[in-house]
Each structure stands twice: as C-alpha cells, then as structure tokens.
Image 1 (spheres, one colour):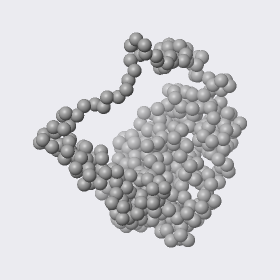
Image 2 (cartoon, one colour):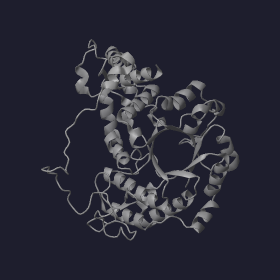
Image 3 (cartoon, helix red, strand yellow):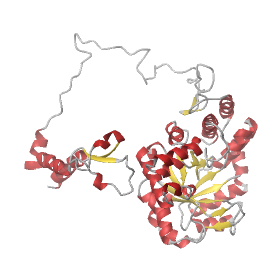
Image 4 (cartoon, helix red, strand yellow):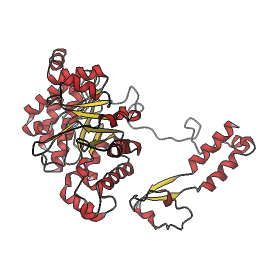
Length: 442
C-alpha cells in the first residue's frame, strides 16, 4: 500500500503544476476555473499569474486511475514506441559527422598547443580560455583595448609560490585568516580591484598577485573582488564594467585557481515591483545596473556569487508609496522570478542591523530572505561608519545566536584593520553567531 500511495502522489505532483507566466497570459480572468491566483500573496506583482495545468481534482483523478487495482494500469503501461533508425540495417542512410573522429573522442581535432599542456589560442592569436574560463575573448557586452590589455595581464598571472603564500600569512590579513580558521569560520576575502584595474596593468597585476597569495590557503573559500559594481561612480559605461569583470575574473581564476569569485551590487529597479513609473526612473538614475546588464555576469560564468544590497533600498521609493519592507520583498520576488540562483549563488547584503535593532528587524532582514528561498546567504556588516564619521556597531548578537538553524548561511563582514578588541577575540565572538566571515582586505 505504501508503494501504491507513493506512485499516486508522484503522478499527482507531476501533473499539478502552478506556473509563473508572462503578461501575455494575464488575459485569464479570476473566474477561470484553472486560475490559481488566489494562492499568490497580496503583494505579488500584477504580471505574475498562476494557472493550473491540471486542477487538484483532475490530478487526483489521474492518480486514482494509475493507482487503482494495485497499480494495474501502471503495470500494464508500456513505453511509447518512437521512430528510430538502425544505421547498421541494410538500406538505412545516416548522415556522417563532419571532421575526423567522433565529437569528444580522443581523435577529435583540438587547438594547437593543447597536446603539450599549452593554452588554446583563438584564431586571432589571443588567449581565449584557461581551465574552461574565458580570459582573452570578447567580454560580456562591448569589448575594448583595455580588455585585451587586462586579459594579457591575466594570461601571465600565476598561482602564488610557497614563499609568497608564507609571506602573505604573516600580514595582518593573513593572521586574521589563521584566527578565523581556528574558530571554524568559512573565510572569504573582500577586496576592491576596480581602482587598481583603472590605474593600469602594473597596478592591477600587483593587486591580483597580492590577493592570490592570501587566497592560496585552503581555508579561503572565495574572493569578492568589487563592491557597488555599476551603482557607484567608478565606471561610466557598460563597456568599462564588462571589461573589468571579465579581466578580474580571468586574472583571479589563474592567480587563485579553485576559489569562488563574487561581486556586490544593487539593482534598484527590483524594489519597484510592478510599478512602471518607478522602474523607468530607476533605469534613468542607474543605467549600469539594470537587470539585463547584471545578468550576463552570472550567465557567462565570470562570477560564482552575487551579493545584492538591501540596505541601499531603504528610502528613495516614497514617491511610489513603496516602503523599505515592500522594496525588499519586491527585490526577492524579482530574483526568484528570474531564477538567478540557478546561475550563481545569491546573497543578501545587509548594513542596516548596526546600532539598536529589534528582534523583529533581525528576523525580517536575516531570516526572511533565506526562508523565502530567494537568497542562499545573508551578509551582515559588523561595523558601519557614516559620512560624518559616526561609527555604528552590530549589537544584536543574542538575537543572531537564536538563528542557529541558518547560522551557516549567515556571514559577517569584518575589517581586521579596525578591530573592536583584536582580530582573534573578535573572530571568536563572530563564530558564536555566524558561520562565515568576509575579511575586508585593503
């Protein structure tokens, strides 16, 4: 009986589907018997529509049909007889594959140099890939001479030597990595390479080498190499942003092989939800972080993690009567609808929990993004200094300790150059409430 019920539930689950569809399907009215819009939350954007492919009643009927009489119909079912051609049979004609050998076998043509362990080259002579990562080809979007120069830098970047790794371990950041390891924290390096990249090849190469030496240690899981990408004023054009991401990714893939790469940014349009006037204004203010400009970084494989700032969403949407909570919820609905978590790990960046906060605020800003399934991780700043020089510190330690079920998904952003006590003591405290730490590296 257990087997029968499991089969019935499996068939019902496959056929009972509620889908997110495009505005073209919005013509279905609320009176449509296949509409499941009543299952959507009150704050769901208007363009999200739910429609049953099979109503629960229909799905039950299908399940009962296949499960009746001890699965008699299911046992008697046979595979669909498709149309196949036996290429070995007399009179059969099958197309021949172009080139020598079967695609993927040992006789397949390969770029010059691969047999000797070299790097494949593009037809233009530029390096185009290393270990599956694009390094010298066209970047996402438009290319530039700066891209080729930076790609050339990437092609000469090598992993740190044993001596360089040992020297890096003796630096303040290296000592903080050691202290973090002792507490069991998973370590990311949080650095900024945009200014070094803009400064030229020599400065960029030196910065990549320094970060690569720190990241060479096995306890370092990844490198976040820029913050507020496209949102701040560092870059002026799409081409610049694309060239930087491509070059930084390529260089770090070589300098720190096997390490995950991440960026931090914000997509202001996401907070607008379905308000077209709001979206139009946000695109006008922040053209470099429109959703279609950000997604290529993920789909091209240049980065493995994207941190989306939620603190930057607070304020600025009053014109459209969107408060901070609605802005945050709109953002995560948009992320889920675009399935960005399929392309890269999505993290929520939260700077608004410093100072005095309530338990409800902690739950809303830490638990909600993870429990809703939109973000796989939440990054909290432990110290924030405003434009006037006032420093606000994280105080909600006891509330954060109560979030034990998601502790591994919560990371602290910590700068060992500005410790509260000392790095070892601070990191031990951080490990009581967090599972990961981003060490700010200058």
